[in-house]
Each structure stands twice: as structure tokens, then as C-alpha cells.
Length: 452
Ligand code: TRP
Image 1: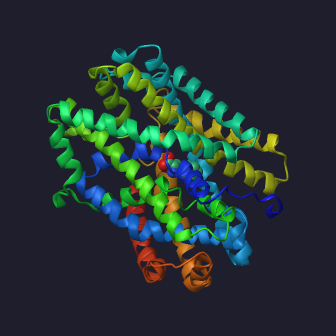
Image 2: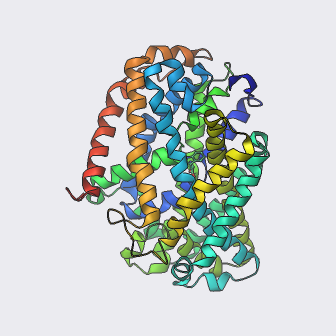
């Protein structure tokens, strides 16, 4: 495995590739709807606080584990300590759950891209358009299949370089578009400033444990933590590139884009709902319902909307590619199959999990697990259950088995590590305790033991 380990083309190469995988639907689709639902400013505050302490430490730990072991996630823990081989396997299950439903949403994005391209902007801006669309059976499945197929074809031909190149162009364009749309909405629409206030100013009366649960799940998801991705990236990283600096850059970038996406969507929700706060709690549909209205109302909206959905499509695609690449590489290693067969197996799994996720909004809308629709359930199972468990054991592994000192040595191979003290304390004490509490509350509430 490690024999043909390539490495990124330089400092920026690593950060861009990691950012390309980190920035995706998580930032643009998932973050704004969670922020809207779980209290606005208070969610933002909790998220940023968790991100600079906890997210940073976990990301640094994962990259260092990868670079030290020089093998990808599934083998990295085992390579450093035999008894922890199981953790590599657990971490690798996460992308298998995420990729299928991620592709369902990737399909939604493609549908909107296609619609805007052929000039259906005002149709798509109708309030019930999105609900009717995901409530239909065939079309969402078709777009899901298309998104999957594009991802699979790219992965089949082997890609790392491609992701770097696409990210380099896509990221700046995406940022400019999001910023432009946000400024347009805030400056021209009545009620938008209220949305800005709701989003930026923390209101402590909106705080609940759910705010923390959701923020932490989102942190894992958005930064691609607790699933071995950063470990794999670390294994490709050259020894003279600073882990601490790279982690900081990826984090600022990832959180920055998520923040801007919220700024683009939440004020628009306020502007279009005329003060009806229930619009904030819509969940997964938020972006698809709100943004088309913004585009429909702005001059040149069709073109801007098309460009926007195209960039989101690219962001989703780069993320899906790296999700799929992880799983494919793992099957090649573990099942001793070639790339083609491995891709086929992954496609099979995606069909198995993706179809129910999509049908959960139409044919099977009656089917719920623990009171959640199927897509929400897969999202919950990975973000609120499996990832916290993997993160918890990773902290125990890094903090007590390897010891922070070993990782700090690895990190300092490429320069000073200023946050050394915080890193050790967070990994050993703060993170495990917080994760445990959060895990307990999300499990107990899912099973209806407590309500939070
Ligand atoms: N971080 C990605 C996003 O924000 C989603 C994601 C989660 C991901 N895990 C990943 C992407 C692993 C690539 C690889 O959309």
C-alpha cells in the first residue's frame, strides 16, 4: 500500500486537496439549515468555539497519525498499535454510510442546475416546487444515479491530481458568488437585516443541548473528521509541511465558507417568510426552497443561479470523489480486488443505501427509523453516532496509548507547534468528556428517554 504512495505537489497542494474534500454540501447545504434550526447566532458561536479547540486538535491528531504511520486510515491505527486495528475499520464504515445519501443530495443539486440552465428559474422558485420534486419517485432517483455515475467514472480513472486542479478554480469562484448573493439579499430585501441579526447575534435563550449536539456533528461532517479521511491525507503529506498551519488554514477556509453560506441563506429566509419563524426549521430543503426565490427576484438571476448551482455541483462532486476514492482504495487493499471491481462493489452499496434515502421522501415516506425519515436517519447514524464514537476512541488512542508527546514530535518535524499545550489538554480531557456527554444525550434523545 505505502509503496506507491504519491505526495501532494507542495504546501498549497495539500491544503487545497484537503479543503476540496472538506468544502462541500456540508458547508453550503447542511450548515445553514442547522444554523437556522438550532438558534442562529448561538449555534454559530458554539460551532466556532468547538472548531478552534476541539476540531483543530482532532484534525491535527488525525493528520499526524496518518503522516507518522504512512498508511491510510484502515491500517494506520493498527500500524501504530495492533489492538486498535478495529478503529480503522470503524472509521472506514462512516464514508460508506455518507456517500449514498450525499449522492442523493448531489442529485438534487444537479436537478436544480439543469432546471436553471434551461430557464425554469421562476418555476423552481415556487414554494411547493421542492417538496413536490422530492416527493416524486422516478426523477430524484435518476439524478441520484447520474451523480453516482459521474463520481464513479472519475474515481475509476484515478484522480488525486484532478481534485487539486478543480478546487483551485472552483473555490474562489464559489466564494465570490456566495458573497455576491449574500450582499445582494441583505442590501435589497426587506426583513433581511433581521435575518442577519438572528444569524450573528447569539441569543442565549435559544440555547439547548441540541445546539451542541448538532454543532459537533456538523464539525465532524464539515471538516471530514472521524472517518479516516484526514489520516489518509496525512499519509500523503510531506514531512516538511507544517501540520498545525495546514490544519488552521483548512479550518479557516472550511468555516469561512460555511459562515458565508449561512449569511447567504438565513437572511433570505427572513425576507421571504415575512417573519414566520417556522420557516427556519425546514431542515434539509432550506437551501433548495430559499435560494431559487432569491435568484428569481434578482436581475440576471438565471445566469447567477446557474453558475451557483454549477459551483455547488463541483463542490459536491469533489467531496463525493474523495469519499468514494477512500472506500474504493480500502476495498482494493482489504478485499484484494482491482479498481474496477472495487468501484462496482461501492456502487452496489450506494444503490442499496441511496435508493431508500431518496424514496424516504416519496414512496416510503411512512417508513421512519427512530422517528426519522430514512435520509435523516443515515445522517444521524453517521454524524451523531458513529463519528462521535470514532472521535472518542481516536482521542483515547492519541491521548493515552500513543501519548500526545509522540504526535507533538511528529508535528514539530516541520516547525514549531504553538498550540501544543492546548492540544494535549483537549485530546486527553476536554474532548473525550464532551464527546461522551454529547453522545449520551443524542442516543438517549433518539430513543426517546430524554427530550432535548
Ligand atoms: N466535508 C464534506 C462536506 O462538507 C463532506 C464529507 C464528509 C466528506 N466526509 C467526507 C468529503 C470525506 C470528502 C471525504 O461536504
